[in-house]
Length: 365
Image (cartoon, rainbow, N blue to C red; front, side, top):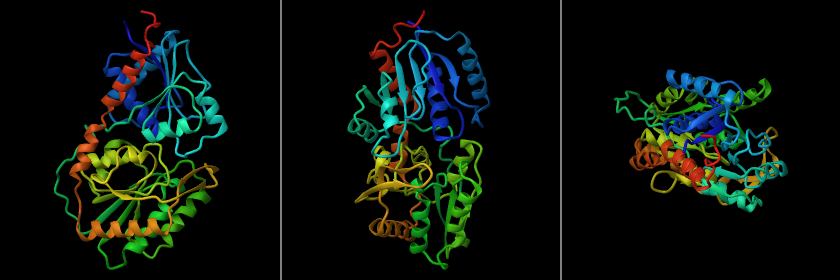
């Protein structure tokens, strides 16, 4: 039996784009016959050969198999568009504990659903999603995020944060924690990689003002968007500790990537982080309460996320001081965790699920 899939996704350097690219490559390497229906235009790629693969699969959509299963990797409120007559699988991500009415409506339209974490599956079940749900954790490209063991010559301790300017990502809280943990005499630095293409000039200025008004502004550096994951790997390599104080996450690709590079992790113990962060591989900031999610851009109280208050501030400050004072710069348990989360594992779960559901059976051979 020839295995065929009609694949609908975006390719590029967003979370969805990176996830889609790696799933596409994994399915391709398994000799699954793909017809690619791309959402938007592709952005920068990691390897030159990726462009040829994408062009090959994109051209095949002209003669796509009507009866092949359809896999869409996309937002939960935009799943109405389907290609072909085969089983419809959605691989989707969300951050809040409550789904909107349109998200629930679209999710209950598809035949099967993939999510990346057990937390995500629980949210779907709690929100009345009645379709079969499968957990397929995402992976790490270990050919890119591989520790080089270079000798790093620097005279300070570097905290790094990766994530676009967004209240959900918690940079407002992180900057306050950094200010409370250290003073001007500490040999420490905070590096932010926060590019967000969806902000207007006023919104960007509001974020930049948080840095400019900080008493430790001279110890905070803002980096421009990096074009490929190779550049991201280099950015992480120059860090001593990576910190992610998200109020909510659908997965967060960057934490396992930082783990793969042997970096200590400070992270909130909530949402999708709980799939791969534990007390053995991360320094966790426990969350006592949830609060309505408001950021006046994406979230308007339609669900809840982690409340970052005084207790969480105290935990974070203590952890930042601890890793700095003890000069903790490695994370061997994190390396082991990252190696468990391979893209091959993700793709194998997808392939096995389609096989077990007889989704390939009606494809034209």
